[in-house]
Length: 336
Picture (cartoon, rainbow, N blue to C red):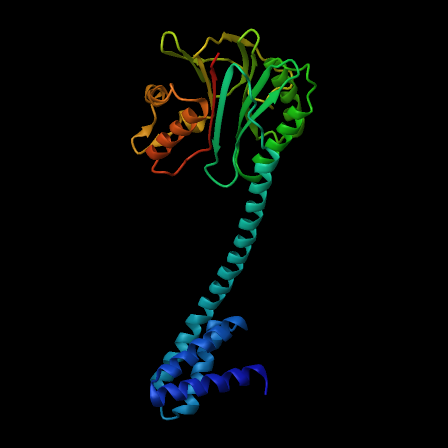
């Protein structure tokens, strides 16, 4: 007896039992048969064929119209079966992709991880939350031998695995820089050449690079088309934008990046961010800059990490806990 004959005999016995008794046991047997059919990949049209053959043998006096209706059902289920098998194939591919993305996201967190440095005169906090599994944002700290602290925040115009790979290249390039290459403008010029030579022309990167000198308390910075940050003056309670002009990385390998400076007094706060912060979207539209500053000002008296966490929670709530873009916020607050 071949496999089909075995399945036919089993199904006919289940059908016969239910027609005669209508018991729960018969229904249970049918459920087991269903699971077995799925296991052996019995198609829907094959199930209809089994049913028709079984019922014809059990009830030979059935009206011809009923048998013809089963023929129509068989034709319908043939198309359904093809679509169902295609759906199952796509689900398998989808599961494989999801697994690969989960692995890539885990690798990204490991590869792009950075330690927040400890500085006697500066309290530093940071938060970075991807809108999806893979983030297009990146931030990085470097502690130099002379005590200075470099900070960088970048945003790739593009998402997913290609963006993550690009970010890994940026991190490797930054880690490979000699310690005497601290000037923000110099950092961006070096990275710009790397990006221009190694990244697809359709992918661009914005970046803000800064350097804090704890001896002079001067913060110097340059920007490659990145979202401007804010500078909070503790004495006056005023927020200024950290405006800096510069071409996106990867556009022109000969691009130069100007440097700017701010004197940081006790209580002053430097806020660096990605456009997922400034372009926070609600049902009413984009968040106004004054509204964003209001949220920051609400928590400006707290420690740096608390400011970052509280502002994130406020903006997450505004978006119904569904980020529409990657969110990265870095806080540097002078304490002494």
